[in-house]
Every structure is written in structure tokens, then in C-alpha cells.
Length: 599
Image (cartoon, rainbow, N blue to C red; front, side, top):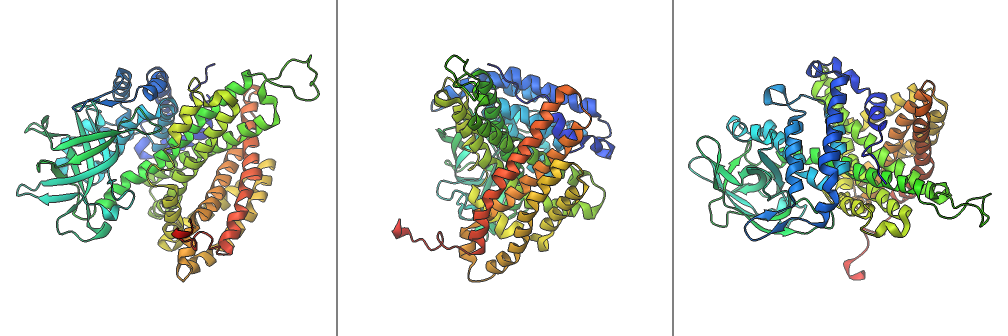
């Protein structure tokens, strides 16, 4: 049984029929491109993903990297795939022409990423982390640091990482202990330990550029004292070529349940007192700089979760069409032939749920990518500012909702396969293991919920929320298709309930009920994310209904499926937030009042 990485119609629908990505071609930055360019890029990505990445996804999972005390060894297919990705120019795909990039929209590069995440998320992590690290250097580092590192990161000669987490601190970056001591030549000596550093050691590139959070001696306490440093695996000679090994050591590999082909490392900096680091930007502003990479990574994690979920959906869908078992009325006689299981009502339910989760998550992430394109290319400063606020508001949702729903989709894929689902002879159990990491990657679900309720909703006097409401109202007002209008009518009561709830929540955050409310932050995430995704699905349904008025016969099933998935989400998933509405309205204290001793 074979399945395509992505349905042939899916990217065309998301990019051109829902988002109108072609309209970006009128903007100065993208005027040298056309739709044919975009499509050629996507075809190249699909070809490389199919031929170089998908072919060793299971093998890299079964034969994960090994450390012999000196070097890390991994299957050769990972290097071959990484080199093919680099040779394609995709690392620099969204970067400026003058930087050696292709100056492609974020929206198109997100679609490119979709093929690779669907094919092999663990090998894909190496170039993706490099892209994000290079972007931080491009935006915040000095000219000297840029010239030394960025060009070779964009070709893949150097790779990059983000080194934040420490063994004792986890997500609490205010408590990091890694230190930086300034030297007479302006460089710093870094000392400390970092844990769970993805792609922190390997032989894929000539150098690894670690972006390390550390505190300069005498810095303010907490997050205000964090600085950011470039710490290469190899220091560079006078010609900027890798030469002497820096004092960065691999303490060991960590063995995760998923993403097994990506090295997860414990790194030691400065054991011998000679770990050279180079300050990025101003002292004590490191967390602000790193948040660029973290927020980029959060959108990437959400999209990756959607795509891994999509892989499971595609496989279980194909399986359900081929696997025969049981009978459905009226053909229930033993003499009747068994039916493909896709004809059973409960299997339809599980497949429809998967479809609503993964295609909803994909569309949500494409919308975020389009916001990034608008921020970079719009001319109107007011529009840029409001778009930034909207992206800030949506980022916790873009990370958290697909990370949660993608795992649910993979769980349902296992269920569709029945007993075959949890065996290693079929890929869906690996998809689940890979995707189970994403609710933790780049900040746990609880952290995203706290960020959303505690900060983003109220940020800039609620500018992001106001822009969200404006866009929802505009989309709903412009909708003229019957079934989509019915879905709008079903969604509006929940939007109205949220609007009525917000003043109560704002007051609680300023008073004695703050602890109770923040303990229930996940309730707010559930409500807001479900409303956002309902809107995203209505956008898809409206576009699909419009196409149904004038499309070829072969495409009708695809568009009908979109409308039906939107119906499922609004009718089955959105109403589940009524519980969360009640818990927040009543300021339920079940969680906050619980005492450690009572467990």
C-alpha cells in the first residue's frame, strides 16, 4: 500500500484558493517570481522528500544515532538526504537574493516544509534548526559574526542549534546558570551545561553553530540578565575556516521515544575553561533575540505536528479503503462479501476527526505563514503593526492546537488499523511516537496557555484580539455560500460567549482570583483555539463551496470532503468547549485548591 506525502489538490487549495498566495507576486519583494516558479519549487521539494527522506524514515527510527565516546555515528542515508536538501538551496529559500537566497514567500517555504515533515521529521530537523538559527544571526548579530557564520549556514556547510534548556531549569530560563566571562579581545568564555539540544552533535556539516543563552558575570537576576552567544563547535582561523576544536563537549546522547533520527544531546561548555563565545547584539537582551527563533520554531512545531498527523491520516485512510472486515446493512448475510472498513460508521467518524484535525492545523499554520509574509512586505505601517499583534496572539494557538490535535489524529490512525496499528510493521505507531514530542517541544501546552491568557490577549490594549475579531467579521460578512453560512450561525454563539467572558477574566487577572484563573488557563486555550480553528475551517468550507459551483467532476469529491470536515469540526468539536466556558465563568478552583499532600 502506497500513499502520497500530500494529496495533489491540498497545497493548491490552501495556497491559491484559500490564501490567494498569487497576490503576493504584486509585491516588490516577490516580483521576480510567478506561480510557475512556486509550483516548480514545490515539485522539487516533493521529489527530494520522496526519494531521499521518506525512504529512510523507519530505518532512522530503528537504527538511531550512536556515540562511541568520540564521534556520533548515524545511518548514511541521513547525510545523503541532508546534502540533497542543501544542494536544492532550500535552507536559504526565504532569504534575500544578495544573501544567496531565493527570496521566496514564507507561505511557499511552509508548503516546502510540509513535504519534508510528512516524509521524515527527524532528518528534517537538521536543516530546519539551521534555518532558524541563521535567521537570529541575520537579524541581531554584528556584521563580523554575520560574515563569519551566516553564508555557510545558508549553504549547510555549517548547521545551527538553539541551546536554552539546562538540567535544573527546564523551561524556567530565568534560572539558567551558564555563565559568560568577557575577555580582553571582546570575546567571552562560556561555562555551563545544556540538555535536550536537538542536532547538538553529528558529522553532517563542517561546523555546528550553537546559539547559547548565558549570563554575563554581574548581570541582573532573572530573565533581564540573559545574553545570547554564538558558540561554534570549531573556532575559525584567520580565513574564517573551521580549525581548532572549541571547548564544547558531548556529554551524552538522550534517547527519546520519537524523532529518534535527530540527535538529542547533553552538551558541556567550558569544562577546560576555554570555550569561546561571541556576543549577539547587546548584553542582557538575549531572551528577546532568542524569542525570534523560538517563535519561528513554535510555528514550525505546530506545522510539523499537523503534517505528522496528516501522514497518519493518509495511511489510515488508504488502509481503511483496502482492509475488508464485517458487513454493513442491508448486506449483513454471511454470504455477503465483507466490506472495506471505511464503510463502517465509527471508522468514518475516526477518519473525519483526523481530517478535521490535520487539515485544520495545516490551514491554520499556512495562515500564520501568510501573516509573516504580510509583515515583511506590506507598505502600510498600521496594517503591519496590527498584523504583528495578530500573529503574536495566534502564535501560542498555532503551536499548541496542532500539537495536541496532531497526536489525537495519530492515536485515531492507530485505532483505525486495529491490532496492526500498534505493531512496528506499520508506520502509524512511529508517527504517534514522533508526534508525541510536539506538545513539549518549544514550550509545553501549559506554557502556551499561560502565554495566551496571561499576556497575548491583553497585549497592546488588546490590539491583537481586535484585529482577530475584525478579520473574522470580514470573512463571515463576505461569505455567500449556504452551508458555510450555516456553520457561521453555529459558531457565532461561542464567539459571543467568549466576548462576554473576557471582561470577567481581565478583572480576575487583576484581583485575588488570579491564581485560580491561571490554573485554568488550558480552559481558555481550548475555547479560543476551537473558535480560531472553526473560523479557519469556515474559510476552507467557503472556498470549497465556491469551487463546487464551477469545477471539473474529478475535483468534486475533494471539495465536498472539505465542506464535510468543516461541518464535523463545528458540530462535533466546537461544542466541547462549553465545559471550559462554565469552568472559567464559575472560577472553578478544583485545580488551584488542590494541595500537594492530598495526592
